[in-house]
Amino acid sequence: NLTAKEALETVRPHLTEKRFVHTLGVRETAVLLAKRYGADQKKAEMAAILHDICKYHDLEPMIETVTNKLEEAHWAEYGQELLHAPCGAYYVRHNLGITDKDVLMAIRSHTTGRSNMSLLEKVVFLADYIEPNRHFEGVQRARELAEKSLDQACLFALTNTIIYLLNKQQAIHPETIAAYNSYVLKGD
Ligand code: DGI
Ligand code: FE
Ligand code: FE
Ligand code: FE
Image 1: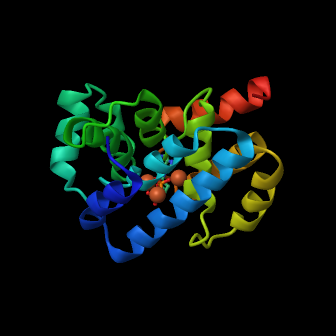
Image 2: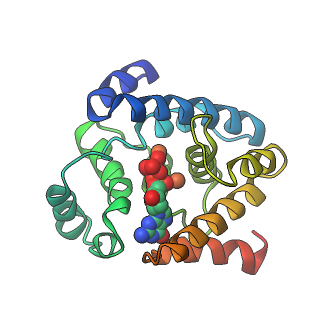
């Protein structure tokens, strides 16, 4: 089983320096949120460290992975930004021997979110959004919400992401919509 230190060393050559700093921020924030909301800190830390491992992998093999290995070609249809999430889960499972389903799921859903996310998924999804190196309109509000309600903060992040995509006229992945709906419909 990989330690956090080994995972950091493993992921580093996959990333740019800036992305590695982002990853350290996600790790720190995920552990903090896990403490605050009672998620498994070790799992949050491992998922956070590895979440963007495929961010700079070549497009072709990632398309091959979602199409032929995962048989979920839809990931490739909604923009290449999304591929690194499901491919990251696949990569760490098959190349790093990570078998923990919670960790794999948190990596897989870190970009789109998912309908009825687990506590760990919420923690990693939100940590990716609010880590200290993020600078965008609304991030401060998201950080404030994260102090009092994990769910309110996740709903805010999903809403903001959807508005951002709408304004750029980009496709919205069905799982992003499903994640948003799962909050709005049930107040999840
Ligand atoms: O990998 P990071 O930059 O740390 O963050 P991320 O994995 O959350 O990716 C963010 C990007 O993904 C951002 O450019 C918006 C995009 N994105 C998120 N949800 C969707 C999406 N893009 C499309 N096309 N559809 C979505 O539903
Ligand atoms: Fe990402
Ligand atoms: Fe994100
Ligand atoms: Fe990230």
